[in-house]
Structures are given as structure tokens and as C-alpha cells.
Image (cartoon, rainbow, N blue to C red; front, side):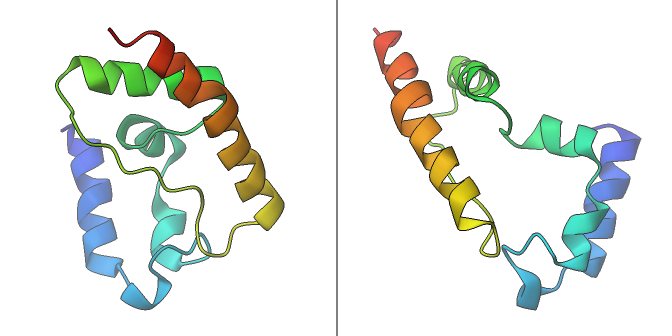
Length: 98
């Protein structure tokens, strides 16, 4: 972990409020730089998500928990996310799995 990432993790740990767990509006969530999220989460368009999940599979990760959105996410955005994962990402991963 880089010093910059370590600083983000320590700040998050120090300011984390369980009352805001899984909420994108929580103050602690607002401190996460985009580059940090890109390195430690799987987010983005279907092709990006598929590529990242494939990479994780390739390094030996054997369990991934998918979270469709934060608890305060726009329901339509969550529906779009679930649809994309179901119709695009997961079938592509299954097709390429021996």
C-alpha cells in the first residue's frame, strides 16, 4: 500500500461512523479519492467491471461479494447496475471460465 493509500485508510478508520454505514452521503465516504476507489473496488462500465473481476480471479481471489449500490442510491441506478451485471458481466465471465 502506498503512503497515500495508507493515509486514506487511516483517515477513513478514524472518521468512520457506523450510523452512515453503506450510505454514500456519509461524511467518511466523501473522503475517498476516485483513484483510491478505482484501486480497491470494482466500479465502472460493464467492460471495466468484467476486466477487473477477471483480474481478481486470476490472482487467486475465490470469493467476491457484489454490492449493487449504497442504501441511499437512486433505485433506477441500482436497477441499471443489476441489469448490467446480470445481462453483460456475469455471462461474459461464465463464457470465459474453463
